[in-house]
Image (tube, rainbow, N blue to C red; front, side):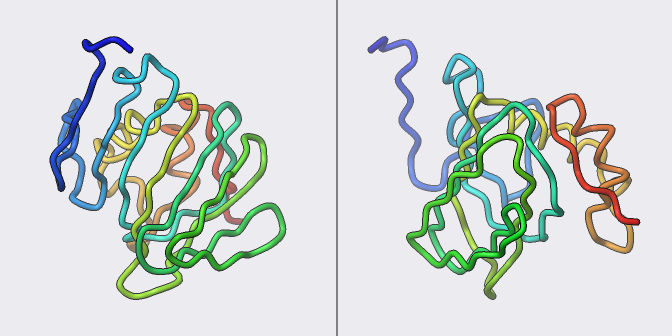
Amino acid sequence: MSESRFLLLEPGAARPGRLPLPPAFAVKATTADTEGRFSLLEVTLAKDIPRHTHHMADECIYVLDGVLDIEFDDHTYSAPKGTFALLPKGVPHALRRGSQPPPRVLQISSPGGWERYLEDLFTAGPTVLTDGELDPAKINPIAAAYDITYEERT
């Protein structure tokens, strides 16, 4: 193991990126840290994530606190603290708050890139919202660069 890639973060610390992310998103390992293999974030799900598909990346989620509702394909699952989920690429899914306070999760994307997508999304600011909620039609132009497609409302 190369010492040049060793990383040790103190409790509550996060890796810096192109811009600071909101406190609900703490990047623990960037795509650059892992030579592109994965990215790892600690996320508090402050807003529900609309139904979408990752075309190139598998997503792994481990619930640290609270309850996460996972809509995967055509089923909805309740994932309490301690639950692990693998969301394979190519299958539509959505993530929803199943508890208050909102669930806190570890999220791994493989290959990496998730933190870069979030940076681009937060750079867009409120332009991706409609009535305070994430709007798939407004997110898709940003998500396309990361091979993610959100299902647009009809």
